Length: 85
Image (cartoon, rainbow, N blue to C red; front, side, top):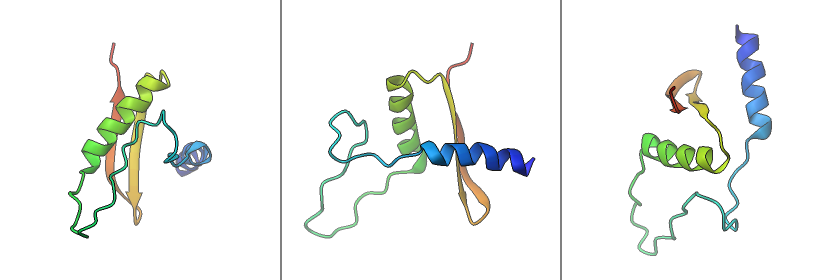
């Protein structure tokens, strides 16, 4: 079973890319620098993934996707996105 996860996650890692800040078609919104050095308001992982995954799935015509974030061997966030019949 672990071999299957390694295979799946390995394939995902090869296709993962960081967004380009100069890409005018990117759905990622970058916050401007804060000149007062105040802490920027935190965005919850749920809100970030809901916005980013929804936009990218629609843009790339992807019907379903799953996101899992692992830290120190523990799943700290997991959610499925998509349409149900």
